[in-house]
Length: 415
Image (spheres, rainbow, N blue to C red):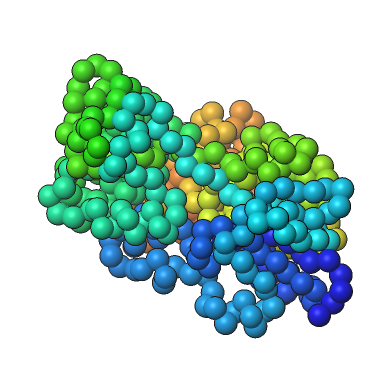
């Protein structure tokens, strides 16, 4: 084994595990130390709210790699290694048990943690979050036929859990503080399609609803809204967003701006420290602003780039974001950043399938949101990714006209 200090990765989630693998693929033959604190090997999170809750997969089946992979790749995976401090001067991380590990390059991939409900009763038994494999196992046991489930938050996690709960035979009510669902993620009309489908499936949804308290003595029995409405339930599932885990970085004097602030190579203000995945914000050349993403593809893309840059390749990151969600018989696929658009153009791709294109003030395509059958939206959303990557400026009439093949627009003049 090489005597050089290790490549150390704090955070054994998707981004951390994929980075460790990519370091080997890119020729690093020294030590790699991957530090996690969940007690289990790295696993895929998207199935937790869908396949795991539906009983179609176990959390063990969500693991990225088998145990042999880490020994074969000489990756020192530690699943119960909480980090107490980053000592930038000595270039070491100090673990909670007092031991320390020297690093040549350090990656912070600590991800994000769910926001907790801050109302009286939020600490009652029966109030759940969904972020970890342990959370998913607990919820899978809770979602039994006939149970009354209250979900706080109409974001993607909340709506995915609602769909899974309905499929398990539960009675579901969703409470959302905002005026509509998926406020920051998709255009209002796309959110409307999804909410209509949830209501068709029997889900009751309260918008602009402020929670006064959760009811119960030891176990939650209901939700009381500030307008006096009371919703009886057997459990509450909270899905009100996440916040990046930046505490270690902040304590070490690393710049933070809506997450750990990195440049377009994913390097922090310390040249030996990088950050990637949900925890970091980075400048994106396509959108000409700093953004932070919380999605599977971004973690995968960041891992590939940051591994090479930890090896001093100096590559910049400019991938087009992409996200998906499955709810009932509907698929949602989003490319780019629809929230950055000021004009929306709709293309019908099937009887109930639509793609909504988002254009900025200069007419540049910045986002595409497809909703409906996967066979009727996936191809065009993929082509839209290419167009967004080109910063293509396309006439709205061409985007709207279903007889015009999007692939033929890929040569459109880019700004």
